[in-house]
Length: 536
Ligand code: F6P
Image (cartoon, rainbow, N blue to C red; front, side):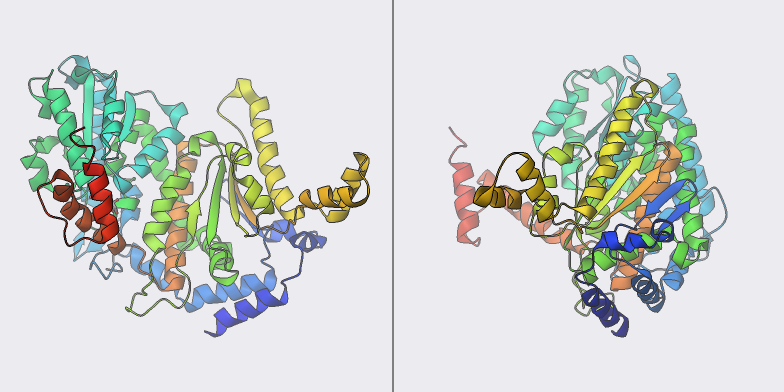
């Protein structure tokens, strides 16, 4: 309680201060940024000063972040509402030993990784083919963690693609699979059914549709299917050869599963060697998280900046703004990672959370967002802490001028958010345009930027597989640290269940096979409206 109220008091005491004034200290930028293995995290354009940082670090210590972190890496059952260990980090480990219930789980992970690599090589080389020859296309059917991670990473690493084309289908809306299959040849298409549970209704519905599509042209459609799942009984019932099933344990949460079998699509696209680079980047971040002092620890610092903005300053949302077109699915990926992990109103011990849960995460790549929602970020009444990401270099040497412009825009936005434009500066602009009197005053007021809006920037040299691995593991651990500080179990997701149950009950009502009499008036009205078009 004490540290939280000290933080609130510290924030209140500095409420009128301009962030820009903090740069009167010539060491501000260096003191409030950290460089780790080629990454630069700059949080100097925030209101966090030495006093705030030391209180935030005290908060992390009081929450025993390091003890909880060590418990996670040691395989303790820290996901205690599901009684599970949390060991996605082992999926990217080069070796070592971690015991769950006395059994070393690392050999099994390495064996599955080797099987995946052998399979990926065989598909990529044409040693394994479809009915019509070498596979040209792969359709990954999955949703949530079985889609967002691999889809985001496959797009992010497009310059490294040298395998079959990857397509991701997630939505149960028939439009998604219909459009994805357009133009594909069933005889040279491999279908991956990615579902940890192999029960998710969207995925199973899409998988059956894909099987029917393939059966029209391929005598043994199941031979062109692969499953990424823990539920081997269900994959067998679907008819998938056990040799084509890549499983993982219940201690890998869906939204943390990209590093193992769920990453098979990415591995097919970029090859096992580049996939190994991706894992190495994630592992390097694990090592940093485990070993660096908290004051220099990137995941801890990202978490503390997040806590400062969300729970201390009360800013409900966080914009993730990658100035990197290939990271355009990063905000969607982070929405699941952060909001499914820390969007909870009950603490580990079952009591009500004392503070706000994790932030609302949203965003779009720059510069596109600038021409859409940045108006509100600059001049709206609410403050949106912004998190910029940018590469120093692009992958297109012939288009270096594009990249310079991209970067200039990124840096300009964080500068503009902090600096703003005063009323006097706006008046001078209007006067230069020849305005005077009331009209000058009126027009000037529209052109004021209050500024003093916080942002952080994460920079890296280039978006390589290694760097992507670092970034994703960084965000995973950030979510973990925020969860520990808030007292949340970041690894369950009970909040997704109720809607699933109600949808199951509503489907027969919509089909006219069940009575929806127990539903509320609004739901009955919506059902009736949808049904009114059925026979039309
Ligand atoms: O509905 C939420 C969820 O359980 C996510 O946590 C998970 O990533 C997604 O559904 C997909 O689950 P599965 O991989 O079991 O199909």
